[in-house]
Amino acid sequence: MQITSILIAGVAYFVLGGLWFTPLFGKQWDNAVGFERPIRWRPSTIYYIGPLAGCLVVSFAMSILFNIAQPESFQKAVALGLACGVGFGAVITSVNAISPNMPRPGLYALVTGSYHAVGLVLVSAIQYWLT
Image (cartoon, rainbow, N blue to C red; front, side, top):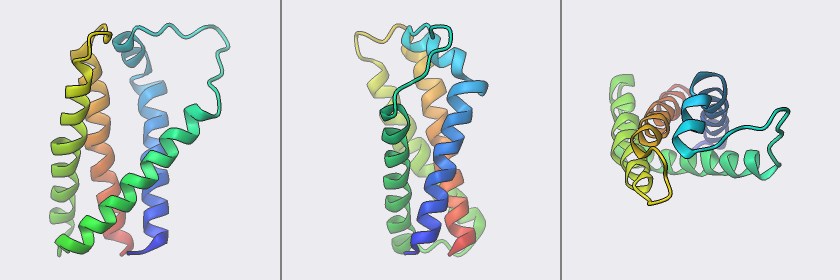
């Protein structure tokens, strides 16, 4: 387990989220959760700290899985990331989307679940390259 690869992969996952939920799919996510961004809206610090901490924890957990699975090729590392991203991230997101206060659960599951699937592939690829 290498701290450097955990930190770099976690920060990359976080940066992907910044891109995913703002310029790429921000409007779709807002629509899915029923949020209308006020003009000149600035989110609070927790809006950044919470996801960053979560991304670092996920990267740490992926490094543990890497130590257990020991993928011997880039393709197997990506397959591990995809299995975790879809099997855990996207599925848990989809189940959570079914809550009664979610205006558009399918859209939420699609936008957020696909972020986690792509993000965990990214984490897995970075950890493979750096370990």
